[in-house]
Structure formats: C-alpha cells, structure tokens
Length: 121
Image (cartoon, rainbow, N blue to C red; front, side, top):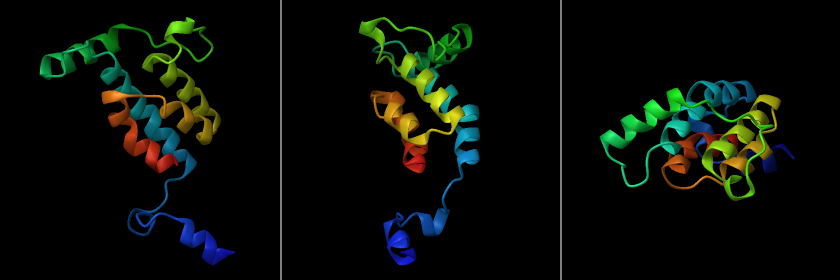
C-alpha cells in the first residue's frame, strides 16, 4: 500500500515536498486571491503595464463579492464570483471543491492561479 501511494505522488514532490493544508490556505489568502482579483479586473484589451496598474487600482477600490452573494445567472462564472466561492472552500479546508472552482477560471487569471491549483491537486 505504501509503495503504491508513493508511486502516485508526482515527481516534483521529491524535490519540493507536498504543501500542507495550512500552507495552501495561507498562500491562497495572502497571495493567490489578491493577485487573481487584480488579473480579473484588468480591462479587456489592456494586457500591458497600464492594464496591470488599472487592475491593481480596481481591485483595491472594489469590494470582492462574498461567497454567499447571489451572482446573476449570466455572471456566475465570472472570475470575481468563482474566486469568492473558491476562497470560502479554502477557508473550510475543502480543497477538492476549491480546485473545482479554480478550474473554471480562464485567461490571465487561470495563469496566475495555476501554481497554487497544481499544488492543491
């Protein structure tokens, strides 16, 4: 049983280790959520430096939706609402559900979240 469990681990686990739940929660709260919101609020068609600065500004000025906030049906898969639901799952220690939410992200937001999502998997 132990050998089959070790074989199931990714090869990167031997060099970088496996993150604990607490490490994943802390990293999500302190870094991933903030950076993903900034990427989500970059105006369409402005991927350059000015767009990144606008995304930082907008993420500071705009309050993030809570996980209990009802999203309009047409906007339920927008990055802001997906991140809110993922954040709640991470806080509760429900990594499978959090990863499921993070997989709904696309574009720059998905790129920003990729490292954390891979470690959580």
